[in-house]
Image 1 (cartoon, helix red, strand yellow):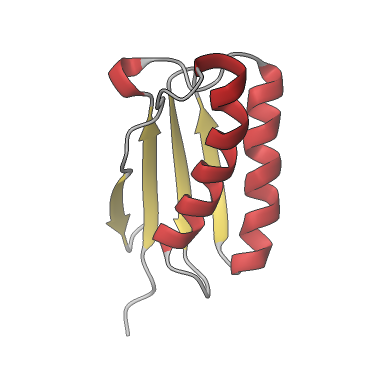
Image 2 (cartoon, rainbow, N blue to C red; image 1 turned 180 degrees about the vertical axis):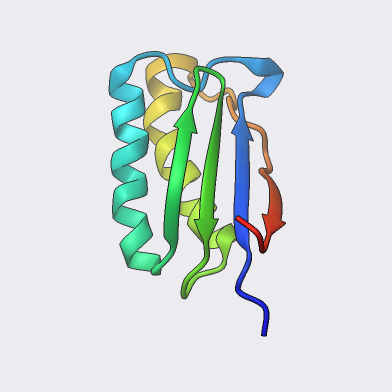
Length: 103
C-alpha cells in the first residue's frame, strides 16, 4: 500500500499584488491556519509566506483540501479586503496543488 500523498498548495495575489501588507496580516493568516488545521485533522508540515504568494505543505485529514483552503482564504479575505482593497479581489480564485508520495 502506498503512503498517502503530500499536497503542495500555492496561493498568489492577482496580478502578483501583495496579499500581505504587514506583519499583522501574516499573523492573521497563520493564526487562522493554526485554528483550522486541528479542526479538520489536516497535517501541515510547513509554509512559506511571501509578500505576494504562499506555499503550504499538507496531508489532508477528515476534510478535503478544498474545504480547508476555502475556510482559510475566505476568512483571511474578509479581514484583508476592507482594510486594503475594498471589495476588489486580491487572491487568485483558485489555488494550485501538486502531490507527491515521496515528500
